[in-house]
Length: 393
Image (cartoon, rainbow, N blue to C red):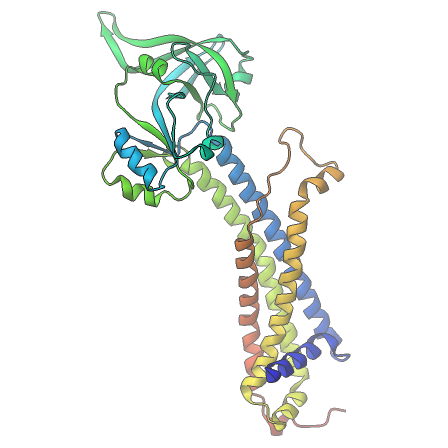
C-alpha cells in the first residue's frame, strides 16, 4: 500500500505540482476540463432524453395497451399469480372512421370494460386509467386531443363512427356499420392524423364492430421488458404495444444514441489530449525516470506512474463532470426560466437521472483515458538508464 502511495504521489507531482514543464501541465488541465464538459453535457442530454422517453410512454400508455392477450380469465389469473402482470380488463380493438361535422379521420378504436378491472392488489390502482366517464349503452367516447382541437369540438359534441369490420352485404352492396357517439373526454397525445385513437365502453364498441372474440388488456410492471411474459404465453395469441408504438420509440432511442455518440467525441478528444500531455511529460522526464530506476524502481513501476497520471486526470474530470452534470440537469427548467427560454406550451422539460448510466459513463471515460495513457507509459518504462542518466543544464 505504501509503495502504491509513493507511485501515486510521484504521478500527482509530475502532472499538477511541478513548476517545470508548464506547457504539458496546461494541456493536462485543459484535457481534464474537456472531460468535465463532455461528461456533464452527456449527463444533461441523456437525462433529458430519458425523461422525454418516460413522459412519452406514460402519456401514450394511458390509451395504449401494454399487451393484448386472447385467452380466458383462468389463464390471466395464473399470470397475476406469477407477478408477470398486475392487472387485466376485458378489451376490444378495431379500426374505424370518425366523422365530425367538418372532417373524416381514420382511427384505432378501443373498447374497455372499465367496471371489470382485475388487480393483483389495490396498491396498483393509481397506475391505471379507470375511464370513469364510460358507461354501458352511454356511447361515450374519449378521443385524441388532435381531433378535439383541430375540429373545435366540445364536450358533448356528437360524432359518427363508421366501420367496415363485419359489415353487412345487402342488395345495395356492402353497408358499413355506423353509430353516433358523444365526446366526453380527450387525451393529450403527440399523435398526428396517422396515429389517432378513440376509446369507448367495451359493450358499445363491441356492438359497433360486431366482434365476438374474447381478449384482455394486461398491464405489466416494465413495458420495456416483455420477454418473461412472452415466454409464459407459450402459444397463446397476443399483441404487444411494440406492434403499434415500437417504431416511434426506436426513433427516440436512435436520436438519444446519436446525440450521445456525438458528445462522447468530446471525451475521446480530451483523452487524446491527456495522451499528448503524458507523452510530453515522458520526453521531459527521461532523466528523472533513469534516476528512479537507479533507486530500484522496476519497469512496471514506471509504467504505473504514468498510467496513474491518466487515471488522476480522468477521475478528477469524471467526478467534477458528474457533479456539474447532475446539478445542471436537475436545475434545467430553472435555468431556462431565468434566461426566458422556457416554452410554455410544452411545460417543464422532463428530467430522469439514472445513476447507473452515469456510473457507466464515468467508468468508460476512465477506461478510455487509461488505455490512451498506456502507450507513453510503456515508452517511459522502456527508457534506458545509461542513455538518459545525464545532468540537465
